[in-house]
Length: 474
Image (cartoon, rainbow, N blue to C red; front, side, top):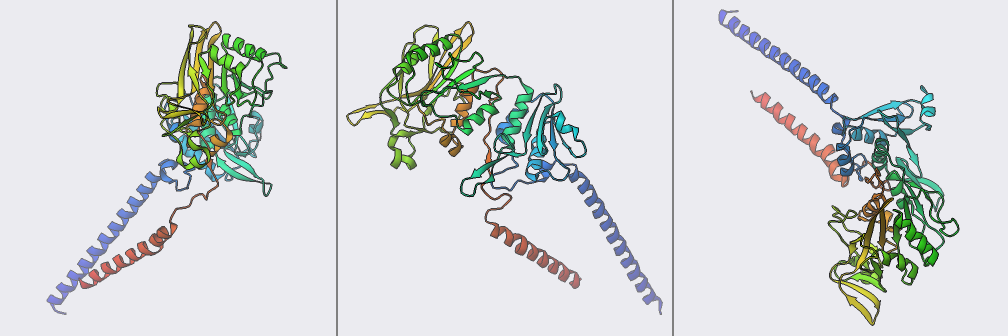
């Protein structure tokens, strides 16, 4: 072999060796980069790594809870009492996402099989969440699943008589529990009976419970029970179908003069004794139904005409301040705000029709103009602030509207009314998310399937083929 061929062979060998060395170095660098990236990504919180693609955004924490957590200054422990590896993934994901929003919240899973005493410590059952104030030890237990006050709510199918998962309430339950263990409130709410009142629906009762208030198990018959209980922080008279007696009107007035708090949802017209209480506090009920020729829900007009309205909400009242979405009321009545019996009483509206409102008595008696539907009267007494809230509608806080139209502001207004007279009550009430849709599904999945199964593999194949052909030409 001559010197020229030897030189060429040496040159080729050296070039090939150099190329191989560079390839090995490149591979090593890439491997190191991948390892470092994996370590970095592994340190990221789960709420960043896991995307919520469920239809109802089950794992997303509401803006209401986020704002609430910004004010949290107490260390909170979230204790999942379940066997390791068996916690419902929906619950564990949400709890992780929730805890990631505050440095004051920690999460721990305790296996009651390994530590059976934990169930006795918190008077809990297997598969429960304990929300605990780490500083005071105050806690609340929330079952994973149940018909009420649970993370996953179950309801009865009346056709099959089997229970099914109806709603995911982790957001509302956890936020309410944190508020409860972080503050003190001992208010008791009573409802009256004896006048054909509507029962408090599950949603209304749930709002009261989430507000960290107690709904009294026994309703109040003012005549049979000797008046209003001493521990009554709020008395609800919910849609009576008959008037109270004159003696009961006097009991209500005495209760108010001693700093009492009443919510009256009234829809009947002929009620002079209810009218007596209202007039003393600056409200004069009027005959007829209130409607609105501009602020009515046109999709329901075939059934209710102008009487299904979106009331005007006062922008300055404590019950409606800052509320942007509409409310819904069917067949409300109206009142005039008049001079109260005493100068110490202040009365202010918070629900009206627009200026295009009407007051319909009959076909021959229709008045045009704004109608007042809801008002609050307050008076400072020796025993605190008396509050008389009147909403001239039996529908506004009914179960059908509170649960059937959760996007409306009715539940927010109800929460504000319920909690206004209680110091330390929780005003953060979050509705549950429906579970009657498929979870973790992607709408228009056919296009996504085409992208992942067809387009991306084809692009990778074509790109690799082009790269290979270019290398062949070199």
